[in-house]
Image (tube, rainbow, N blue to C red):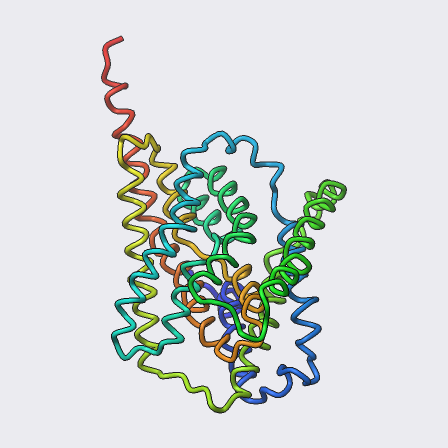
Length: 344
């Protein structure tokens, strides 16, 4: 039996929410613009962004990562791929695409995607659904989130430069106040209320996404308030196609390379590597952009490729679950076959 309309809405409410808040921002941008009733210069800049990272700190189960910690070679591969290789390969791609009619700011948004850390949840969910190395996926999602707090802003500044209105010292002060400190506070508080959290299982993901919608709304209110900014629809379509092709390429690349015998990864490891290395965090990415590029008039435009990448990685991952699971089981059977045929 197919899913009811209500079930479909519950499963996809965040994607629907993104469309709704962007539409509302277009209808009346003054509400969420600076100086408007929403007062984003306070509510979003400080409270919403801080809450996102406090929520992440409170929900990250770092105490469960000890079992996966010693798999150093796998972690090194994932983190180097997602925070070194992907930014570089996307930068080279953008240099080529700059010669095309595609909007320059949307291309810079592709660079933004490349600089993002792995997400906290989606890669873990897909790895678990396939039956891959879930412990490794949890470790790399959590560790990548922590690492991304330091590496991602540096990558953004290196590839895109800084907003001229915000000095570097101010950027890193803001990162410390609204990213690092709330994250650490959330982790410390988790130690004391771990039992309560395990009993009640608060909906961290849903609450975080709701706050993220507020950040996305205020970002696009700023854009639509600036009537001089125009988005080329042909460029938008081109970016959507490029994002899809980029994800397919990265998935194929991680799948192929992680099977090299010299690396010694199991099929279950390959599954974790595929999803953790290629997925990018919208939840952590948008708040970071708000800090690093505060006052940047093209902020919402360079956010668009990341807003496209997020649902694409979830939909593509969902479509691949059964196929990847079949491959993993066949590969595991093939590995065990020679041992099972040995004489007793």
